[in-house]
Image 1 (cartoon, rainbow, N blue to C red):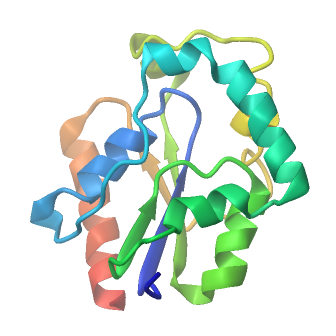
Image 2 (cartoon, one colour):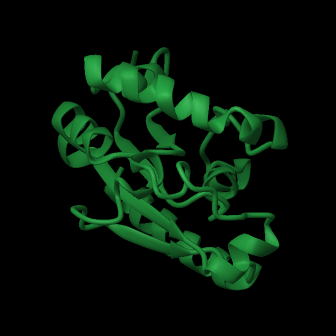
Length: 167
């Protein structure tokens, strides 16, 4: 595993567009090369509560389990982690990679999320896996992703320019 020159740790609620933002950040025209870990799908939604339970068991045993898995084998100088869920995720990246870590919160209104087929599910949307970063993190960047491609592009361009200056 290479030592990264920058790590962007993205978080956000279900259907906020984290994967889309990660994909936009890593498009070839932005000079980054990153493979998405997982995308949103109806199939995944069927098993989300089981995945949450299993994930909680793993994190209780080893808080860095998923963080290490996310970067295992990464060779690029810039990493985009598309789905941090808990304060322990952010803390792990900051503890291991220090000042090269930048946190990015992707936000979308409930109305926008509903247009993306989000429906509140008890036990999912009120679980730590969805709410763990609602407090306790001063995000370096907050990206609004409400479907306005121009506004999103402008926000990402500012982030990318800052990132390129820091490399």
